Length: 464
Image 1: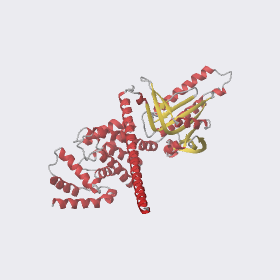
Image 2: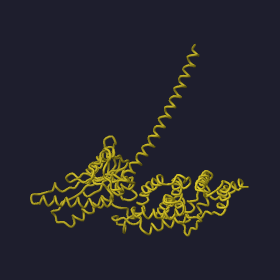
Image 3: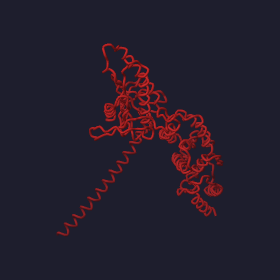
Image 4: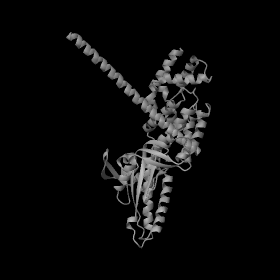
């Protein structure tokens, strides 16, 4: 009897363990599905905002469209000081006019850095980066705007007489925000969330004429700006929050090393971060517009080439700017398939010339990018190191372990367009092509050449 009860107990325990595992698996699957859906919703929201921005449409079709959530927005909260020092001899209306002019100039600064102005109350000024169009560069852009605001006020004080008493405290914090759109024809944005409150708190803990940023923002901008630790403030539910004073641009990234104006090195670093936004836009367009029979020249291939040019580029010792040019060219090198299969390199160059000026690429940079795109045209004939890196990255799969499935996808793509007749013909063509192919860079030869030779022998064995 006791043995029977023990067996039943063990069976029950085993069943509970099995059920617990099944529940655990369900929770994990639901979490993964929720993350996937969250990413999809985020993508659709970006797409909607981008379409509206490009079309000039401002009307919202539903109240739900008015409320948007952002994982990372950067809030700037500025407190203008001066009214507390007013005396009877000072002209109050004149000072109000001067404050309005000050805010007007601030408006031009935030427009320059693609920031969104928020409600201005009294002598406080607030704006946000990364809203309503999300981007990866908003922390850097907000700090640049803060430096320019502070510099403008300092210059104004130097030019004015002793009666001008304006000063400023700027607080900056990066974090999740919820934005609500008000109005239709002229839209204004209202922010909610801890990020806004923390930016205000940081501003209050800032010395006059200083820019105080949170640890969150510091981590996102420390490669661009010199910062000095400024203690901690207690924040409800978050504990003590570290703060940093921004002293200026890192000398090596500024004109004449003065820490005031950004130089070309700053611009390249900035564009490397901005590349994430550009990549999302182009990959999104490829997903929507590439013909469905492109089994090889798909989004995955573009991502592979972008990854590979960076890997080979750094290994070959190229500069940061050259890595930027390589990655951008890789992003566009097959985008021309949107327009047509043949001469897609030319069409890719046209798309690059259409998009890249909006991301402040110079005409010279754009032409170099187009040269890299054209270098992938068959048969390859690279003329310099960057073109060699580009060609090696584009045909990297020839020496990879996934050569067979990738090769099969290219065969299916060509067969569906009646560019190849049979698998036997395809294998003969592959032997001829791969045997004549060469990797141009030392890095690619070290990584892929041995495996490529194995692929040649394997295909020769099939062809007989």
